[in-house]
Image 1 (cartoon, rainbow, N blue to C red):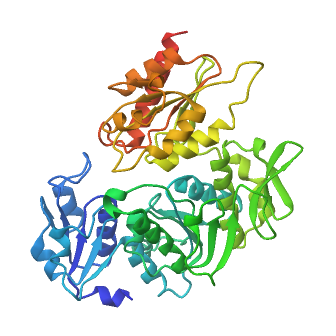
Image 2 (cartoon, one colour):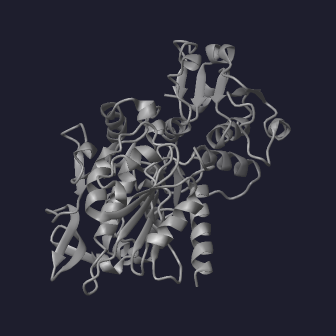
Amino acid sequence: MTSLSDLKHKQILVLGAGITGLSCARYLSALDLCFAVNDSRVNPFTSNYNEQEFSKDFPTASLHLGKWHQELIAKADIILISPGINSELDEIKLHINTHCQVMGDVELFCQLNQERIKPIDILALTGSNGKSTVVSLLAYLAKCLGVKAQLGGNIGQPVLDIFTDEIVNTHTSTNNDLPEFLILELSSFQLETLTSMQAIATSVLNVSDDHLDRHQTMENYIKIKQSIYHQGKVAIINRDDAATNTPNPSQATISIGSDDPAENEFGVTVENNKAYLAFGTQNLIALEELPLAGMHNALNYLTALAFGYCAGWSLTKLVDNLAGFTGLAHRCQRIKTQDRITWINDSKATNIGATLAAINGLAQTLTSEGNTKPRLILIAGGDGKGADFTPLSAPFSQYVSQVITLGKDGDSIANIVVNQANVSKVKSLHEAVQVAKAHAQAGDVVLLSPACASLDMFKSFVDRGEQFMAAVTLLTEESL
């Protein structure tokens, strides 16, 4: 366990000079500690930041770029490693000494948090898909209920900035009210270095094939995800996904699912052909009253309610405020057009599970009008990160009328389509929108849900989504 006093007189190395690394640097600098920052990239900074700015901001730090610095790694007592860096790389792993503590920023935060007279309460979520939607919804609900909560981890403010702000504000006599709750979205990369979190409730939302280029096997990936349960009092599990079960059978649990819930469970009930979110025998709110469509979003709503319930928040007030949350950009986001085609930007779907959730969730909305049933046209492809795309074959056959593929692994996706007449291969996102526009009729749905990472063609999934929306807007306005 690391305390503030332990940080003094230690050789501290920050690996990575991105968002997380600079957050670590801000915290260490606020404590007037000497440390080094190392990044294998020659230029890890954004366009408006450089080495001169770094030296000005962190006068007690040394900066080493262009390679992993083996001597610094070997001498370090504490290594703060950014989640995007794989500590198993030979250039790093082979040089870490036996007494060195290797941890991420979230682990350091949790260790320091336990030292406090009144620790910040933590609610923590991981999963393959939907994490950001759930934690953002939970933060929104906290604000509606007058609870001071902060988003952190893989979204929102880097967690160490909370303590950095406290130190700076103490020096300047500025009022600094710490949050009552920290709502953490945690990736598998962050969980690799996290062991000391003591959360009120934790959850694995779902598990699907992702990041196997780093974690190698699904068994290892699931084990890393489930490690979150060892660090919380109550485990919120998903009855629809056995991989979300806690490995500790004696741990207190509460479950969510798409079926009828038992007592003290959350689920979905159907009365008079209308589906409701429910808690035990109590119907809470009709799904049709909520802005986020699809069963995957129903499970997202239920998970947020379960977290709030575990935190002791009023379930009635939580439900009363659900409909005010309209979701996040690039996550099954509708694009406003005048062509009577529903265009949906789901660029955040960077793995197979996310695309499966989008297809299955939206398929339930494709209700027939008269003798005509709307069709679903899918645009997919990018960097598959070593994933096996065959799980997409069945929903493609059942729900998707046309698959448009692009990017590094576009051909791999195209090859699993049973009827190759329903495949179009393109070289750009703009061309994909043109082909979709040519196939689509009024009432149809065109879904960008790539099932792949974006970096083979775009700066990020955000860039991909923005380019998609721009192309849709341009082509649909030209056709009016």
